Image (cartoon, rainbow over all chains, first blue to last red; front, top):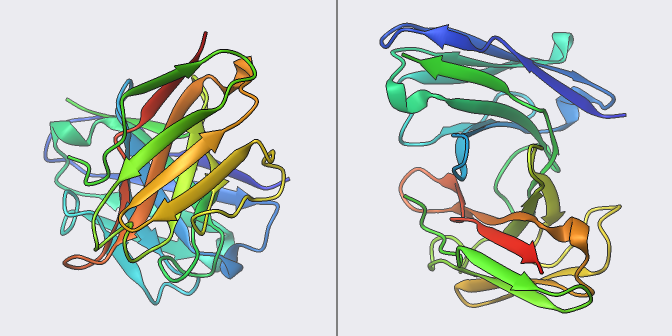
Length: 123
Length: 111
């Protein structure tokens, strides 16, 4: 069974940093692109960042560009999100998600496996 | 603020067909394929449609996607009580540095 388990969330003061992790199992991690998506409770989904299978391509939402860094360690089957200079508006449930392809964008793409998320509260 | 616009709500009785629209622009829906996600209460989203009209393995045929120009639609036929959920369209956007955008979301209620 494909599984994604996020960790690293918590309560943090504005301006501080936090690193989220996503442990992957049940599929060949380095075959697929990966994403971070966040959701404020009761609100819609917001894409945060994406990374290709070999870390050769990354992309960020304008709202986090320059503050967040997505990375992956294929040897450890893990995805990360380094979040710096956190703001109140970064408060959300953060999900990691697997793409159906090795990268993102392209002719076909989509997030077909999701973790349950880890909560980040900036206050 | 999302660039993909969906109606906030839709509803139908069991067995009916419900359709949800997703309005975008030439830089997203008009030039890239559309995804649809279902989010049941308290759960993570689930991919329903990719490539405008393709269903991942395990997604019932009651769910179908279509696209015309800068608008896309998700249709749910044979509506069931367990279809009550939030539905989001999404697409890659080619503007600026490229980004993935979700729609505003539609709450489907089964009456």
